[in-house]
Amino acid sequence: MVEEKSREVRQMVDELYRQESRRVFATLVRLLGDFDLAEEAMHEAFTSAVEKWHEEGIPNNPRAWLVSTGRFKAIDTIRRRVRFDQSLGEIAQRLGDGTSTYDPVDDENIEDDRLRLIFMCCHPAIASSAQVALTLREVCGLRTEEIASAFLTSPPTIAQRIVRGKAKIRDAGIPFEIPTVSQMPQRMDAVLSVIYLVFNEGYSASSGDKVTRRDLSEEAIRLGRLLVQHLPDAEAKGLLGLMLIQESRRAARTTLEGDIVLLEDQDRSLWNQAYIAEGSELIQQALASRRFGIYSLQAAIAAVHAEASSPEETDWTQIIALYDVLAIVGPSPIVDLNRAVAVAMRDGPETGLPLIEAILEQGTLSQYHLAHAAKADLCRRLGRKADAKHAYEKALELARQEPERRFLERRIQELA
Image 1 (cartoon, rainbow, N blue to C red):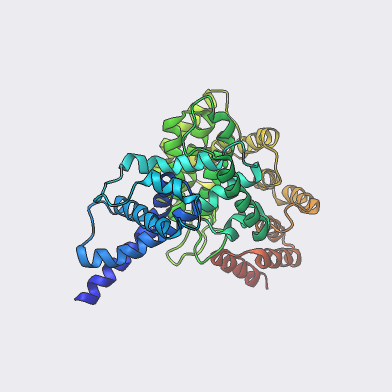
Image 2: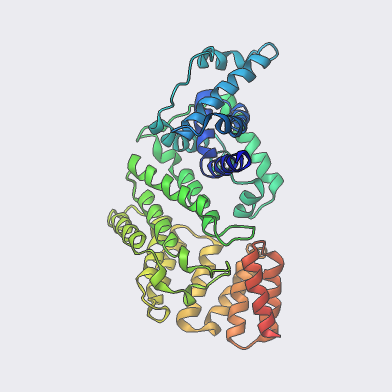
């Protein structure tokens, strides 16, 4: 009985850690004003929860309990260190003597703390190369390797950016606050980029044994909703609409065994129509504003896919036209690649393949497995088995997500 209760508590704490740890961390950063101290206090609070909840039962508001416990743990840490580090004295004074009884932490403030932390990490005083990396690490809890994958760069490079970003926040005394409406435009690009990168990692994990990470997708959507509430900006609406429509396909994107189901093979009755309707409404508002950008355009492309009741009814001409505009507003090799695939779907693989080969020859996407997989698919459709096999093998060499690796291995076997 005791073992069973202990196991239940452990499982709940583990689940809370997955779902709430970065929110608890964000609030502790607000209270402590120190990233490293907040990280240490958060971990001590979760450790303490395993012991206390087993003895005293689970509190009514576990998240508030964790924040309060983390704060007291930090005070203990400061008391031990203050004689050696006078910089901690200010924090200690702000926190009080820590002898007060349990002080519930305002839940509404906790909800906003993560958004405050994002805006702090995206402050204009921090180098743009560090803003997104810092936020993804500290706010969203992504590993350095995952961030490096999203940026197509190395983990040491990302680690250096994170260290420099934290030092800048400390040295410049950057405040923990949501900026005023007039200050927001300076930070919006980085904030939107962060939220979308988090979503992308949840929508298609860069590594691991699952295609998706629901916790990250849901968190990105939650942050998107929060952002739109604070600032009904056209691009914020476009981004939220994009995430909702992409997320609407979650149930159809994998088999029960966790294998990938391509868009053209998905059971569209499984798509979440409520998400599609909400996303489409946001996209219409964004486009109607005439102040839209890359997220609204990507959302419009996603909406065209969502409107098609079957792959054959997809309006590829409209999708290509939207990619043409996107290539002007926000040019990138990924946009070129996606446009080339759309051209292949409308005009045939013989037309799309030269476009993809030209993109690969430029070198920017030479280490991007999906570019090689796209080339392989078109070669396969053209009956060029040797070229297809070579391209699939290159994609397999670069892929780090297990379902993607299984998919590529099956394709290679089919060509044997």
